[in-house]
Image 1 (cartoon, one colour):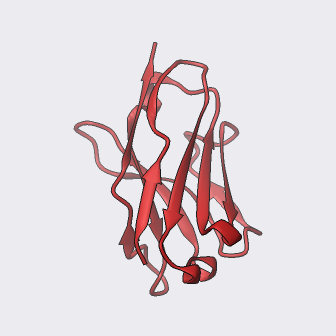
Image 2 (spheres, helix red, strand yellow):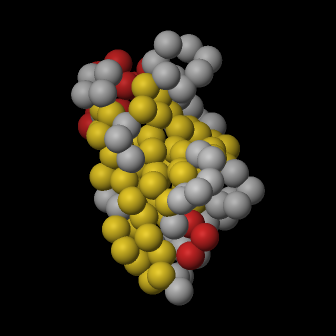
Length: 117
């Protein structure tokens, strides 16, 4: 499976963006999906995860209450809705799939999100 992330851009603090991650195969519907981000000079960090069925979500404390994840298995797409954005949310955002089991082993190419103050 291949993943294509999109939807990044420049937004003012307090604004919203929705990122999309489209998968190339229908097997996407069986995978837990995660979102990660990497800011300049920092390590990649976990943002959130949605299970294959969409029944369970978890988020990093830094985004809890502001970000949410959803998926449309019919469209092979997972979404990251980001509200109340802050300058510290500026990063390249990646989607990833647990295609093989326990680890995130398939990654998208990343999409840049820049939040201006």
